[in-house]
Amino acid sequence: MSNNSILVVGGGFAGITAALEAAEVGHEVYIVETNPYLGGRVAQLNQYFPKLCPPSCGLEIQFQRIKNNPKVKFFTMADVVSVTGAPGAYDVKIKVRPRYVNANCTMCGECEKAATTSVASEFDFALTSRKVAYSTHLFAFPQRFVVDAAACAPGELDTITAACPYDAVDPNDTEKTFDLSVGSIVWATGWKPYDMAKLTNLGAGKLANVVSNMQFERLAAPNGPTSGKIERPSDGKAPKRIAFVQCAGSRDENHLNYCSYICCMASLKHVTYIREKLPEAQVVIYYIDLRTPGRYDNFMQKVAADDKLSLVKGKVAKITECECKSPILTVEDAVTGIKGEERFDMVVLATGMQPSCAGSKLPVELPMDEDGFIIGGAEAGVFAAGCAKLPLDVMKTAQTGTSAALKAIQNVVGR
Image (tube, rainbow, N blue to C red):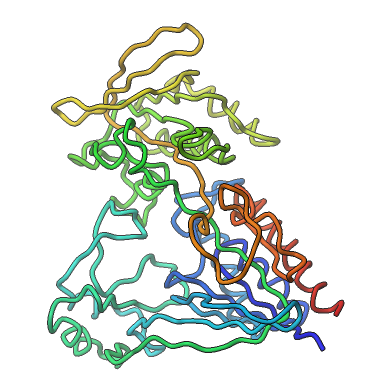
């Protein structure tokens, strides 16, 4: 007899959608998420398509649905270690890393105040630092702090523990493993930004005022490192000239060989951020092709009408910087054939979207293409969703989550 429970690996928009769709028709669902919070990449955005809503707009509704549905159980800071068995009867081993904060947490923040050590913030892509006792963002779900015990100075964990008035910090927390029995699996592990350090010709990781598109999202976000002010990382000044370099590492046989689908739309969206926050700033987008499929073409036409925006079809060969840390771009205009240098106050690299499972060994055998996207697995009762499957925007990500949930349900019901 088939097990009707469904495992969802990944708690981003695709995974949450798949879990809720399955749970709301009666299936027990388990979400396993490696981060301390649910919400995935969407939680790190300032706004997302199609309505340019803040991430809390869509995610808080989903979180309420999870809270109100007893059939959904989730585990954060958790990973799938192994999968054995067969479709309809899988045994899955889960490992949960210690959080050092229990359910008594009220988000009062006393643990963070007591912490003295700071490390680079993963949530803000190292644009700022975080304490070793931290919460990634205001609407993080679950609403509970995390203590990074491995980064604590000697005796610091004891100080943090003593500072909590609710006995929520547990210094004896340990790694745990347990087994789940499920009939189907939805694989929704999402995407990661392409490693900027590999884009050496574009100054990525070396030049202070060259940032990635996801770093720019954090700079524009009210809960970001600058409280939503768009400013140069080197000196905190508002940039007057900003360049966007499209296909930074995408459509390139030396990096990502494919189009990441959302990068052009993301840069056009970023222009709306600039116009709102820096109304006089001049913006140039250097592109190979501007790809704005379907209804997004109307958005492109609207943004392109901005008289302070220039769209230049051209390839950026390299980026250096002057003494004042302003980036200097070497660009060949594809229309005129003229090669020259342009100086800006800040540059945003539209880095590509790479599947999170690229370059890693999965705990279950799944067919992947050469870029790391999952291209099968249905015959094994495993169904890919979201950006684990192909580059997608948030709306299409949710649609693939629904599709994967339906297939997972059919897999267990039909046995």
